[in-house]
Image 1 (spheres, rainbow, N blue to C red):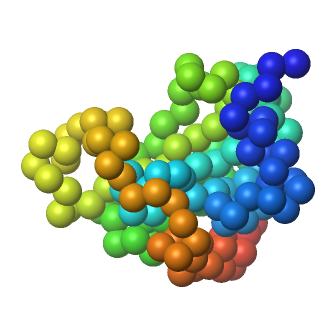
Image 2: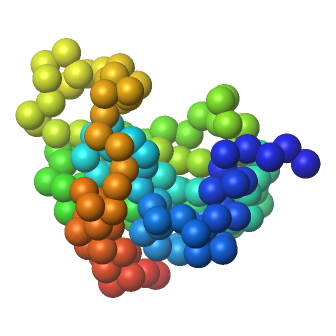
Length: 148
């Protein structure tokens, strides 16, 4: 079995050992991104972990994508973002996971049409409970209130 950072993170989430946790959703886990390259950056990690979206049965695909959109709705609403960008690659970590990036009107001009990887991730604010706790709690509440 291939063990990726996604596998290790989902194992930590199931053990209650990942402080980035927002909520357990139908298809997996909503977590805060590290670093916070854009304030409110989150990920959706499937549970159980699978190699890619196409490895899921159709109803599980629908559940994962619906959870990704629900997370995006909450992120957009609570951060004041103008939109969210969504990304599913799996090239570096060959396990399904979705990135949810809020995008803001006050981003630098050069970044407004660039993808989030254009930012200097080494200079981004690292995740910490001190700087993310309030948004994490708000996201958890929003996701709990709008659970289908």
